[in-house]
Image (cartoon, rainbow, N blue to C red):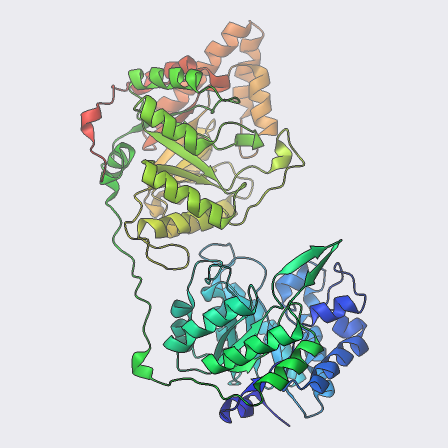
Length: 625
């Protein structure tokens, strides 16, 4: 019986099978069906597809397990079936191969981001992959193909899982976009040597944008790695035809490119999305007479040259950074951007803050999913028109990773230096509940991203040239219902590079004291949120409808009694409560963020009188150029 090790050792070109999902869809399987579960529910269909590829001439058959990891299977309620699904899949493929083709276990990404850009740790990812790999081993695979990965860290976790359980050979394949790089921006000339250093036996590219893009990636890989190469492109980019996506590349076109890939250096060629047995049969006919051209020159393998640089010192990034770095008390006020296109009233508010000596203005990014002028542009206009530094609240809700990267690079170039990174409120909280949220990464992942930018690297580890110089802030909630989880996330944010934190509004000093005792070991400045209450209704709204805010009964009672005496008394009592809170927290934290309730900046400034602030002088700080 053929094995993957045999095919690697013989030095010849070998053809891999094509798409499984495309074939299952062609058999009438709906897209809302878990294709991995079909190994259990319709084994005959899966087995027949494998046999068609063997008859077409494929010498390497992949199991129907691309998404059969416990994370993806959990979305279908099948996590407990992980091992059985993979074992049966391997048995079906081996039966169909009948000794005429080697069988490898197909392992795809988990479908979620892992650290540093996601919540799942590398250890958890490795454990998830291990369950799938153990099932495939029990089914008798002769090796593994790790395919369609965009994140080098994730494919490393998968490869480590294989190595922890066996010494079978591994094909490691990344996927690239139209720019020739992975989703994280990693070039084949970077990930090729990294995969070789990890111990991958075969290195390649699959899926991606079609034969042309994969050929270019193989040409790059051939220059930087001594390992055998593999190429399994899609049948071109899909086109919308009616309500279906059709892959347009013909078998002859795919085969002609397969031959060119072999001539470039690939030893394993096949297909991915959109390819069917006819494509594989054509590829077999085209590559039979071609030998791979691959120069083995270990000394010529370049190593990634991108190295992180030292960030600009915190005290030299902004005035806020200077005060944070030197332990001075920081005063900031939060105002919301306008709903329309006229920034004039916003500028008037900020001028009041500057005249009062406030250190910076906080500009929230769609709080409670409200649609307002963009925070980044608002902050830029404020700094240029008024000359007061802004702290931009930047939310993950509305942008994918690439959009955030573009925004942040532009913001840095335009002179924005202070960020408060937040995950963002879901759209259902706001007036447009049908709007879709992105949440491509959360605040922890974005903190990691910004910290990398401050070290001159993009998410894929590529050099940026001049690094950004952001002051990196994060949110934290002393009143979180699950405080242990909140503290764990805060620890991850600090580990990711957070340099200060702003709390949710504080109304309970005992709660704050317990929280401060827990976060003291993290060693970063904490700015307390102060929210002046304007009425009993406002207090009740915060207490009951704003996530993460805790208003004690004692505060509600004070506002209830004051409200009974009239609106002005209620507002005055709300200011007194905030002044008392500010005076009390001043000994516990390094600064405050005071909200301007309902846009009423004079109310925020009245609260700040308790801090005895002095006007900020423009000569106190010179921006880093």
